[in-house]
Length: 203
Image 1 (tube, helix red, strand yellow):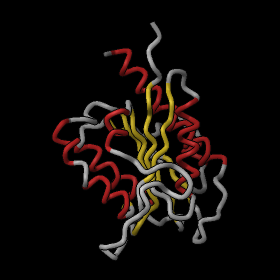
Image 2: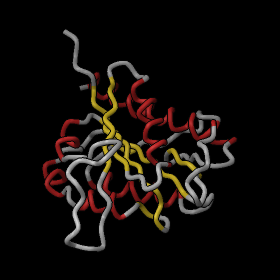
Image 3: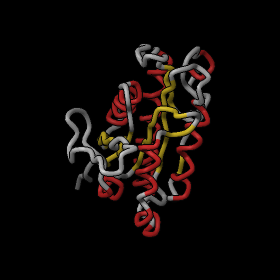
Image 4: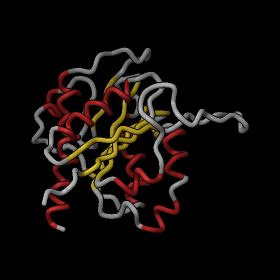
């Protein structure tokens, strides 16, 4: 009997589209692995006006994430642009609301990875990736990086780190994703999906 495809959640926040493009590449890498489907989801922006609320459904792009998406997924990729070397407030706000899932161990034992984009080349790519790992460790996820068997880690002159995929988007957010950045994002998606498949087989 054929098993249903594994759902790999690609959860991201993107202000100007650069992080979204990385998310789409990671999803492409996931879907290149037989038996895996990527589910793209985003989070609403955080407003400084406490009465302001986002519409329940975004006007365009990926739907907003729901807690059921965490329960349904067999693996998780998390992406955010950098904000002073840290994840964006919108992504942090989402994770701050997942205490119920943390207490239940909903994500424990699942594989995860992280990705980011920055306006400047040394604008905090690695520290942002590390900051996004912290709540994932608390949830018991098994966080994956990119090994140096990916030769692009040694040749990239823009984004791409062993901690996760990244993109140097420029101050206007319009720098094109380089071939090295693209290959590393695809490799990260594949690695995440392949790990989820191996974990299911082992179970």
